[in-house]
Image (cartoon, rainbow, N blue to C red; front, top):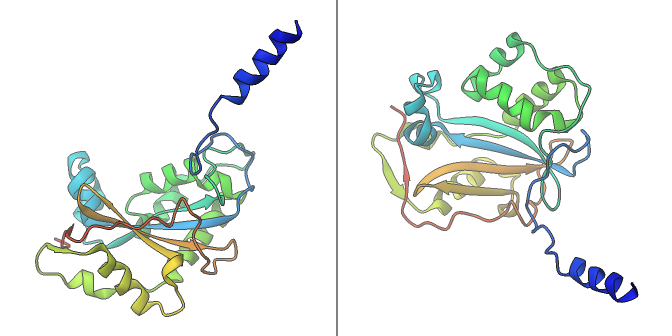
Length: 215
């Protein structure tokens, strides 16, 4: 019997731990370390997904849109959290479409990430808007006359130039399908810039990423 217990103990020790950065689901709301504000380049999303969905977002001349304000832990992130907070009304999600592209996007972000903030829906969306308004979006990308290829680092440098309070370890640029996808900015729970965690800070290293112009 003792040998059996020892064997079970050893086998249990061999079960691999979840790697850093893996999400969990169904956690209690309000337990997180900081926010990640994800700002998507709308022309990229439309080229890869939105146009095929006939999304109304792609009928508008949008640049950097708020993908989401995501509660984040130093390792990993919560999602689909347990909460008794009432879900937002259609009017509330529709009111976010000016910075989030569509009401549907606002609803999805609330469902997956917003509930984890531990805030009433109206307060969460207000916090998301304040975060969005707290940064300056480089105007240079809105003035592109053609699609261009450029190092992803140039995008980050442009953001740092117009946001002098931001540091390089507080912002990261992501790519998808060889395109500039998003800028992600790490913020404290009080919406002050802070260093990104190890599973967020990984920058896109492409030297020839495509950046679609705004049609």
